[in-house]
Image 1 (cartoon, rainbow, N blue to C red):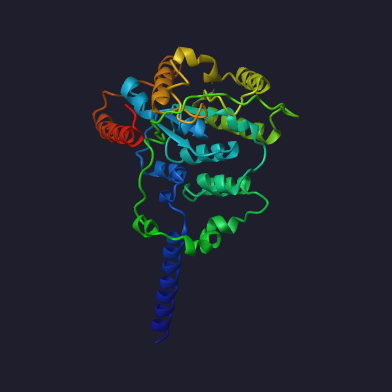
Image 2: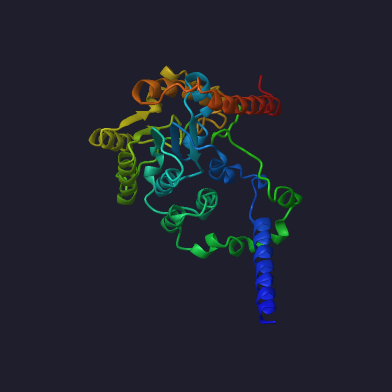
Length: 345
């Protein structure tokens, strides 16, 4: 009799836990709510972990580089672990998380996030943190990222944060309950539409141009982690016309790269060499590249990777080539779909 009671109690507890988990999944915002970036971080875990190059950083990586081009032109197997306004400590812990699964030959880090020394906004935090699988790296990233109004418990149990979404639920919340639509191509977010760069706002003078101590702390941690793992770290600044990249910031990155013997590439300085045209190669007036621009920049960067790193052409590997044949087919289908959607010839 006692055993039956215990069994019933365990079964009842299990039902409660499963019900809460299902309810939490229903209430958590979906990609179909219009925020595509929510899916980017999580998609990595579904991939085979055999990448030569891993990108980490904000929208200046996931919208400006196409792994499909790096493979098709150079046989480089790459993945972008990017997310909106990814802060540098988030990049570090994402790298730490990635190294649980694989050790790439090259890590590429976009330095725009050096401008932030403190946590910024919960909405952006969640775009990065909620997609991470639970690990010590995720826990540390949450604590490093939380604003003063956030609580760890809300990340541990998202239902505490999203319980009020009842009134906003749509049919799509049920349709995509267990199958999340894939939104990226190895972390690249494709846009084919065109909005030419027009008048760029004049840069606003800053009271302080020195990057903060916390930002440097995590840049040092990224550098040291790559060194410890025998990974070549490349620092980059993507060719975005806005927000402004100050000369004082550029000097600091040049000096850091020199001191630590790192390759640093400011793609703003080689837009002509890369063939970029901000009348045709951006979809939002120069903030990010569209497909045309991303493919040009990736082709240009691919040449650098083959010349200055240990990556090799892997197109001769039958199994990997077969995987990429499928990926390229999906990539091409998405191109054609967006060409029709945006009326691009």
